[in-house]
Length: 145
Ligand SMILES: [Zn+2]
Ligand SMILES: [Zn+2]
Image 1 (spheres, rainbow, N blue to C red):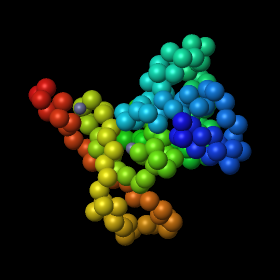
Image 2 (image 1 turned 120 degrees about the vertical axis):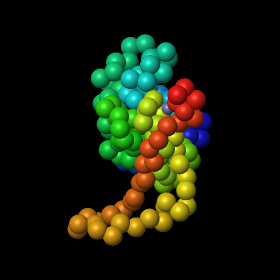
Image 3 (image 1 turned 90 degrees about the vertical axis):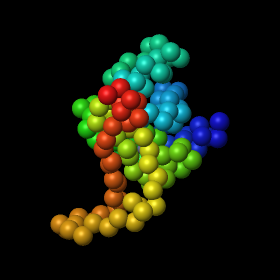
């Protein structure tokens, strides 16, 4: 409940109206640890909102990304994967990712040592964050081999 209220406040602060669709999409994202794709979010929300189209999900994800309520996680995947980015949503604090190169699973990785990484050759970029993507085989895929 508090999460929905925070989300609504955040949207209003950023001039985005809070619709039932947006709220449902954000909730689906914030309650998942899977870094779901737009299709997966669509599938989850459609149970409650049968008329919701995939195109609408994409459009809402774009607007939410623009105001910083969600972020896309972009490694190795052909399709974008998303996570909630508001404080208190788990992914709300800076973190890194563990990515399985086989099944494409993405897990959050919190590691203070990695947070301290600095980029030496910034090539003129004003670097604000460094995110590490550790790639390998997840436990499930290791067992399957
Ligand atoms: Zn895997
Ligand atoms: Zn994450």
